[in-house]
Structures are given as C-alpha cells and as structure tokens.
Length: 399
Length: 40
Image (cartoon, rainbow over all chains, first blue to last red; front, side):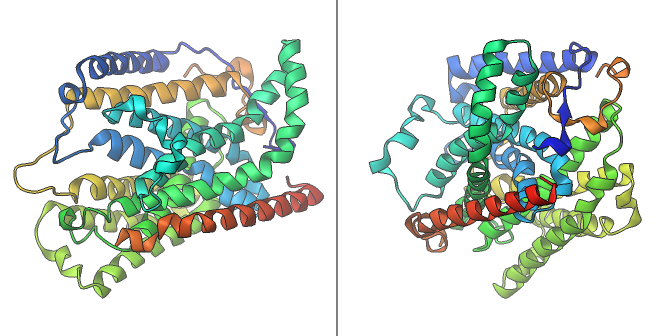
C-alpha cells in the first residue's frame, strides 16, 4: 500500500467488553480443540464414513477462503484493472484475506485424521497426482497463506520503521526496498493461486457424481465457484469496511465502496444466468420443481442472488445502511451456495446423516473469535486502516 | 468428468506458469504507469 493511502494504527483500549466476549468464545474453542486432539476425531465430531467432511471443511475452508478472497478481488481491480482509487481498501482486505486463509489452513489441520503427515504434501513431489483437485487445493492454499502475509508485510515494515527498536528499524529499511521490487510478482502469484484453488474447490464436488443433487452437479462448477468467490470477496470488503467505520467511528467509506456495486451486480447476474442456462441446456432444470431440501435451497440462493443484484442497482446501494444490508445479502447468497454444494446437495445414501456436534461448533466459533481478536489487535497497533479516515485518537471509542 | 475439465491440473502446470508470467508483466506495467500518474 502506497503513500497516498497512508495508514495509521487505530490505537485505543484493547480489553473492551467486545474483546472479552471474543476471548471467552476463543477459550471455549481451545478447550474443545484439546478434546479433539486427545480423544480423536470420532469423539469430537459428527463426521462418519458417509459424511467424511462437515462444517470444518464446508464452513471454515470452503466458505472461509471465499470470504478471505477480498484481497484477491481487490487486487484484480487495483493491480490488474489499474483502478488506483480503490487502493485504501487493499490493506484491510489483505489482512482479512490473510486471517481467513490462516483460519482455513488451521481448520484443515483440525479436520484431517493424520494431521502429522501434512508436511508430506508439499515435499513428496514424486508422489504428486496431477489429476487430483485436492492436491491442487492443498498446495495452493498452503502457498497462498504465505503469499498473503508477504503482501501484508509492508504493514509490519512501516510499523518497524516508525518504532523505537533500532534493530527492527534498520532491518526494515534494508528489506523494505527489496520487498517493494519483488511485490509485483508476489501480487501476480496472489492472483494466480486463488484463481486455481477456488475453481478446484468446485471441481472437487464434480467427483462424487452419483451422490450429488442434479441442481448442484455441473461441469461448470469450477467457473461458478470462481465467480462466487469474487463477489463474496467484494461483499466481505464492504462488510469489513462498514463495520470498522461504525465500530470505531471512522468516517464513512460508502462513496468509495458503492463504486463496487455495479461490478458486483454484473457478477451476481452472470452467476445466476450461467447456473440456470447450464441446468436448462443439460436437461436438469426439472429438478428445480421436485420437492426436496436441495430444491428449496436452490430457489432461496437464486432469489437472494438476483435480488441482491437488483438492489445493488438502486439508489439505496449508495447509502451506508443500504449498501451494508445489500452486501449482507450478497454474502448470504454466496455462502449458502458453497455450503449447500458441499453439505446439503451431497447425499452419500440411505442410513447416513450429518449434523455438526457441539464440539465442532465450538471449535469453529472459537476460531472465528480468535480471528476477529487478531484483526482488532493488528488494526489497533499496526498501520492497517487508512490515515485519512482516522478519528482523533483521544476520541476513539472502546470497541 | 472433473479430470477432463482440468487436465492434469491445467495441462500439467503449463497454464499456471504462463498465467503467472502474464500476470507479473501486467502488474509490473500497471505499477510503473501508476507511479508516473501518481496514483500508486
């Protein structure tokens, strides 16, 4: 992030009531984690041989990474389409991306049975199966976590340069220009990797052909998952920016954020149109009129997607409350599509059922709480949010 | 079916390499342009 979007630490008290509540939820999650690692997956989760994945994959990884695509979506606009006016949104988007992907990678370590062997994925190169969508997802997500933190690292360099530690200051002055020279290629990698693994998350659900509901099984799943992660990323950026401006009484960023609305609207319409035309062309659209849960979810998602696209074109999308509410609809529509594809539309056969256990829910809630806590710590102590929007430090509210 | 779509993960890795180089050149060029215009 460059000089014209100079960022400053938010400052203010850290241990606020909100932070304490998050700490309590995080602590419950850590206790649940201790049970998972001492008693095993069977004791901690509701997963079975039929349902080999649950909310740790469907929510934490499949949805979590898409919500973390704000950094990817903003990079496409700022660095590829060269729309520099959106630059102030990049750094917070990179932070939510880095946190979202770190959270997803952590969840994979919790979800897999033999987590201690995960280091073999990037190192046992001769064992790689180039026809495995999951290998690609694993390699890309692992690499992208590092790429996101490198993309966010100018924040730490800036902090060190202004700080009181001479050692850190001289190290950052030495390394910062080197990073600056490498950054275009790091950004390029940061655009390539989500394009690959987000589409492959769609490919993964093309594999259990006989177990998928016809409304959700499509050869276009990779394309649909890719488009879905981009509009989810923009939705997450709007929610994060609006929430931070309300919570910390920062000036309104709606004039800038609302300029994303037309693009989001087109993406949503393209997603809905491609999905329905694909079903009609392949003769699967009849399933949209057979009464079952997947059918209901399909219509809820379609109505939310088209409704949000229409609302983004109204003057209400130019107001803070209207844009926030519409971004919530966008995120809800996108999240439901991903969750339904992985859980609701997947039917392993008679006799199998899945509903997350209390420990699964506690671990997911705990991880989300910890993620929000890390976000709060970083924006309060490091230059993340744009300085142009800072309130007087003395008047910063205690959130 | 899935395998036929993403042949050996994008043609055995060739497409990602070409994509990476293309994106890197585009980002570098845009960055120089933004520096000149003062919008970086």
